[in-house]
Image 1 (cartoon, one colour):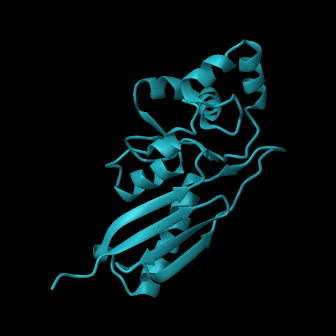
Image 2 (tube, one colour; image 1 turned 30 degrees about the vertical axis):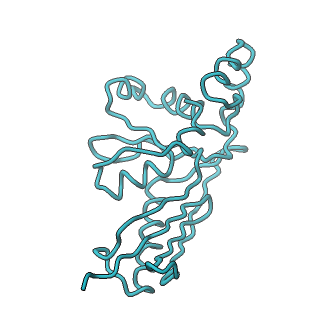
Length: 192
């Protein structure tokens, strides 16, 4: 007789992390939740600490596994839903974030989007990505972060810095830095 295998459904949202443990019949066996603090350093700016994203995910996962009486070895798969446009940069070597994550609703790159639009760049962005120029998407957030950190752009050009939306960050952390990936639904929201 083989051991039961479970699926973990992980929803890392703007205000919290929720984890469900689902059995092979589709029954929710355990649930965990942890509140995620948001940070507002300036009007219109919204950030998350990537380490808080990770810690709230781990807290919710631990609660859900305990509630389900399931061990990590019994998990067959993990599905991740997340705040798709939130942008995180981290060091590949250490896994340490280089700045707070810029949340999807942050408006700090509105002037950059306006400048790109005024320069006539929007049609090319639409052609390549299918998206309009808007601070909602990750692309201008990446540029903003690379412009702010001393030497950060050069480090990124050398491949030392990784970018990801929240799903990529969690996958990186869950695999101990072994996997840096996303899926088409998340990648399509980056403006890259």
